[in-house]
Length: 350
Image (tube, rainbow, N blue to C red):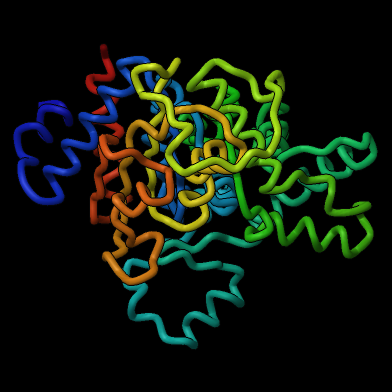
């Protein structure tokens, strides 16, 4: 029995039924010519989500990714240091003294998995510093993911690969030149290392790396071109705040509807979903709302929480419409996301 058949047969109620409905809606959107943005929060790369996500990228079931900078780099760390990671199944039993021993051993813990400082961070730091210096000397400014794409495409760290690169979502993204949007890069290990080299005088300044505000501009351009076929750079624009809800065009008039598949919460989800109300309300541009929304979250519905907000709240912010298909799966994304991805992919032999 395939994963799709298994889910259809057994997942009939509660969170299971929502998973099935969300997976079916995802499949319907992309098989009907739509596009899907996947957002990655938490520690999905360290959880090796790349094993299933990479194939989704290669099979044209994911068309853009917005991720935390940690997920961007941690897929790369896993690529080069996987065999040196240490798993701690009884992590809840660790005492503060045991945690200190892990620090002294250069093992940075993410729940049950420790990332080795020397085999991950320091192995990647050396070639990254060379790329930053190269850009600095040439006067180039690149986004964080563009530096990592260069690293992968040049084969600089291929000799250090510890896993099959087919299981790396970042490698798949680089091969497909997938649009990536990485807000908050300063909140990452490589971001910290970069700033340390700027302070030390190895690099001329932080402007070598383009920031999240520029990512929003790139996302706005991508969203407009994808959904309407129009280029923002060719439009006669002025900042014209408009009445909320007045600039949306019907989904059926879209060149390609775009869905939003959110894993976790935080900046990885809240940053990109805001591009629609920005285009509508701040720029006065006509485009569709997001045409599908699914969030996998272990955050319970709570007061003032973005991760725990029900989808209807997003209607009030101009992100989703009344008829947008909306799903919230309250579960562990490391369990749910691979199931949905395999459901969407179907029989791989076909």
